[in-house]
Length: 326
Image 1: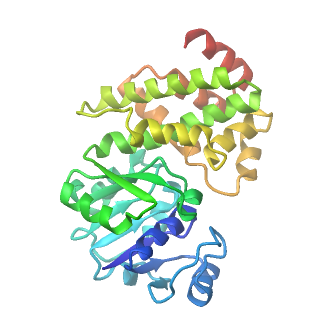
Image 2: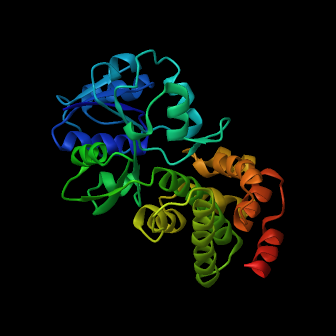
Image 3: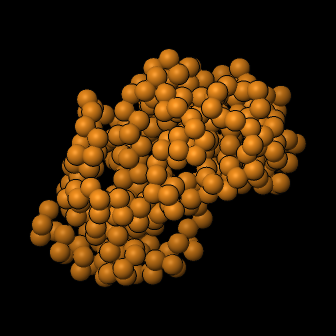
């Protein structure tokens, strides 16, 4: 099987490792000359997860997205949601006959749409041909072969099963869900809640408060998903609660890291400049705040993070206010 992959960051590199570990060939669209050359000559991504070695006979690092997706059935996309439009801008090949696999846990900022919503509306791709890889997972542990659980999410179980066969291994246990809406919005919201968890760390709150906070985040996430799109789902499953927990607690979490830096007294702009990778939650909180103006779901933790990041509200005061109402 030959697949295509768009993106070259940590998670894209980890996904490439899963695909090629199963003997699949990969047309890999990479916009960075140094990364393309490093993979082509040395079998390593020099910028991300550089310890992960690739069989160079299985990868084709390409500078042309159309060449990458031409003639393949499965197209994996793993780029920061804020740059999705930029990566796809040169695309002229049709995607309608392909199965698109999103490994993005974010929302398209100026559209305020999830990845599947944007792909469906912009490229005419049926939702039945859009799959998502849901966590809980961090690229670093997946690339190291640590036991991880991934959920392939798609309304079409046959497509999801095919994607599972492409990425499953002894260290990757996969499951299936048909709840694309719920899994995508859970992935968007968990980044926001990880910022809240990081803020509590930066402010010096302890484990007791953080446990209470994350449990309330789980309830708020469930409330939004259930009220906006009722479905036969269990938000205690790994794709929902599990992903929230790993993003809120892991040292690999860039969203938690962003919250920590701000909680310790840095301005939002300074914190963003200090980050070496994109924190999806920064863009997500603005979009979710706008979307919830329409939905009207009770979301005090979302509002807290929005006030701190976008209205320059003092973090310590906002947390004191939140503690009184949770």
